View (cartoon, rainbow, N blue to C red):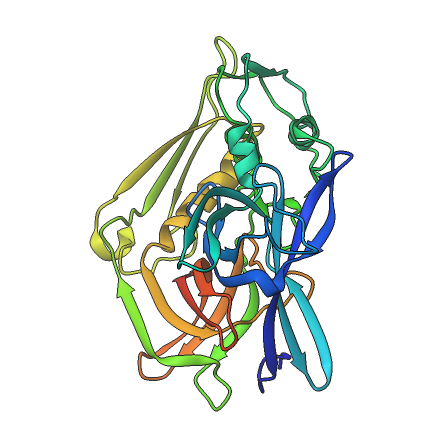
Length: 371
């Protein structure tokens, strides 16, 4: 059971954060001036979370400081009262872009697009080529890139002993986000994301998804009856080949072939056993070790399997982390629906919702093959 299963009072609040000595600090609460807001999360994008806010113009509001749209951040919170306890759950830090003014003849308001802090890394481009030497610890290289962005940056990248097996270079103009995600990919980590408290996160990929909530069609199912199920075999392959770039002259490249049968998925409808032929996907890849190449082959085969079956539905707001309302890379739901004969684990791909009481979250989830 979770705190959300039997309902409670919910509302949203908004904090404005401003740079002070290079660090983001509380500036003021602007909850009374936000007219509407929404959040959109998509793990298929490099900049995962975005938001839209409609707020009253603060320039002429007595006692309020106008927003600096070039540097300030808006931090929304989901507030939930259950059994007399208030839970205040952060929903991210949003950079404010494209502010537009409009008036109804009496009041002036602003329409604002916001993006999570990955946007800052995407805007930070290298002005010279960037090279990392063989033997460099990959996580330490990533942390160095984040440190160079600014002292306001907070991050938690899970440590790793993996080192580069060769020199790696990135041409002038590549973004810091591109380079970091490239390095994370080399050691089989998920792409970078930013949590609800504005912390950059990086963790290893896992074949076992982290189930954060169970949606079961009973009296506390927390999801609406209308559910869309989509099954698509058009992009499925049943054999993966990973080929690493040549490490040194006269040295054979690292190489791995992995099939559904190798993964124990002989019974899958698209396996070689069932269709009698291979459909092959080849990946060129930088690598650190043969162990990396082996794990990358499994990861790419498992990622492909997520293409097969997708569910789209609407549900109440839920989170398993009461200090963080943004889903993490690798988070999943157990989803059960008797009418569709579904009871499986599904990875969270997309979420979108308006920031208003009675919030309904639209989620797109893709089935994870565990056996």
